[in-house]
Image (cartoon, rainbow, N blue to C red):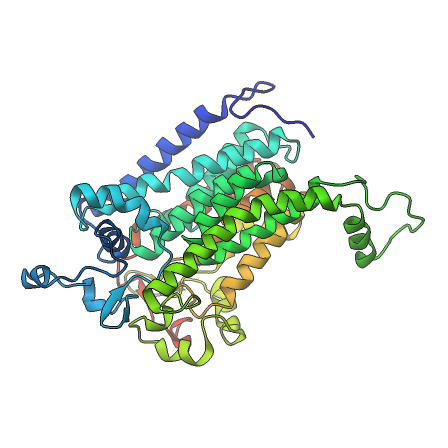
Length: 459
């Protein structure tokens, strides 16, 4: 493998930072245009702004002071019925809180009802820009054969040809978490590839955990990279007399070839900041809900609280429904306006991003592909076992937790970018543009409730 200083032009490739800056500007402008009039007002579900306000005033609970309520302000917004947690007669934001930390300067300047979507579209431009840098890093380190133009194409796929597009223009608490999580995730891939920067990677993963809990399992990527890079023998099958050893045999040889002391030193450096962030998360739980292990989800004032109490937050019970949402849901074609309807559970992942089907038949082998693929599978499985399908959504929004890994996997194993690939990209962009323009704006298009009967078109 070969590597080069970050940002340097190599073999005719332009400066990474300049192209990444252009990607950021283009994406932020497009997201702002699509967001349109939304930029003039705050989201009705601006939980993170209320949490930022609480932090600025030295408290962990939402400030519902009598003078504010007396002035006619409903606190929290919606009367607390939309994913607000109530405990000991106080209101809390149960979601991981790093996005609220990012909001704090704006809340300090403009108040907790500042037009947060302006900030959100700027934040949304970071993930594609950092993804481009991560893809270029793969090319420069020899893991990917992609040219810089192909990496721009793959970046465009993520930015506009996946559910990240409609995610970026919402501004509500659930989608802001995805936007921030993807930005951190792209930076994490840049730091964790080849286990190059353990402390930075661990810090970024800790922040990801404080943004989207399931992204903690991105640690698998660094662990596999550390085992792949720190080796005594480059080829685990070297010296074998077997022509076609079993998968178990190959795995045993691969593990035997690891330089375990070096790999463990790297993993420990990575783990230290991660453990610090986990400890901080547990301390916040204790301060808010009197338990180190209670994040507050069972105190949410939601209709399906009984389901959580019965089955828990993660359970096999939810798997079949979530698989149906992720893999089977299609739009409904009707004879009357608007002629198309979409379940509020969303659309299948392969429908909104057809390029993901390429992963079923990889065109190139790459050792790093296992790191991307296994990590994506672990995170996806956790999301599939979660009590919520992502409802309400245009497409399967939880895929944002591992979309960066899938795009990186396409970079190292997928087909070269040609005319057909570009045509499919334009189709994916058209589909996701439709979602970005219509979601939470055209109620007659999105139908169904949070139950199994709302998933498929009625007979």
